[in-house]
Amino acid sequence: MLARIEALNPRLNAFCLVSAGVARAAAREAEIAVMKREPIGPLHGVPVSIKDALYTRGLTTTGGSRLFAELLPEEDNVAVARLRVAGAVILGKTNLSEFGHKALTDNPMFGATRNPWNLERTPGGSSGGAAAAVAAGLGPIGLGTDGGGSVRIPAAFCGLVGLKPSYGRVPQAPGFPGWEHVSHTGPLTRTVRDAAAVLDVIAGADDRDRASLPRETGTYLEACERDIKGLHVAWTPDLGYAAVDERVLEICGNAAAEFENLGCHVEVVNPGWESPETAFATIVAAQFYAAWADELPAREADLDPTLVRFIRRGGAVTAREYLTAHARATAYWQEVHAFLARFDLLLTPTTAVPPFALDGRVPREIAGQEVSVLGWMPFTYPFNLTGQPAVSVPAGWTEDGLPVGLQIVGRRHADRTVLAAAAAYEAACPWRDRRPAL
Image (tube, rainbow, N blue to C red):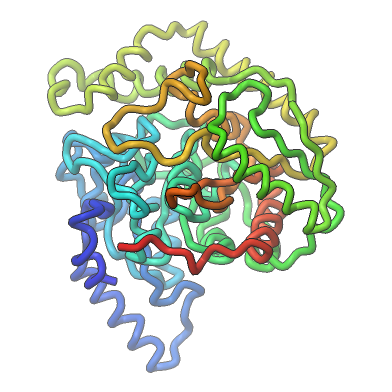
């Protein structure tokens, strides 16, 4: 893996820190444990990468920001610590947008990450470094964070599995502020079972995060063997309000139809929900202002200009507007909850467009319609507001070889059902042997 990183990372910029010495030492320890027939963990010796937003003891953790260029955490994020205990070998830290503030992967300190399927396209973000690394074969597992789609979007753009577990399933502490109430930690992998195996390791309560959920009985890996025949599945191509690229609609529509062949009852639906974009953007902008406004204007020149604008937008949010946005999120959840009383799963495209150009700009027109700044990612952030489990799996590829993702959303805390459905779909439409030609 280290040799492949050395060969390919200069082209991809997936890793912003390669911990070769630490990885080799951990690998030697793993080998000795096997030779001595000592007890080993479920990920013993498996190479993993860690998104640079996640505190990692002994390794520089910057959040993609010059503000923390020399931060060396004294403790691990809970999920990172659990990976270590499970025997995983940390290869290094992967690139992101500054504090994950946008669903792209570039920052003033490390530059932009490229998509392995087309080096002139974005891998999405903000866990784009993790996705590019796994897609390019620079390790089988990337650990990312998802505050509005930041695991699922790069999974879709890079032809991977990206799992956002239920809110609280994986503890969030310690780490950088700004994503309270909406952030999830989850894996990017090549297969559904790899993602389930990681979730088995990192899930479970920790009192440092009082919103974290107790560990469930049984394993998520076992859930991948469940039969999904008879499940009631809703497929919505646009949530009733999104503009979607025709290529994405065709590929994801065909993927959704496959669930009929798997024995599910599939219904095409228009949920009738209004877009929660304003509530989502208000909440996160206000939280970013509270977290980082003290750095302005003294350190403004060191920050990504889009982050500066986002912080300032948060400064214009009143307390009443912030609380009203939270109330709107609660009302939105009530609508989603009532809808899912009829359905076990909701299928959507993961993104409204295939991977786009690596120029820092996002599509503002889709299928002939003008869209908002979040209009290209209308399917992901709603389920950060609700906290439901969701996974992106490869739905197919466009004629020019760009990956497209299908999102599978479950009921509250129904992580096992989501994984079972994803595994069944993978068995019917396998993708693991399709790799970018690097």
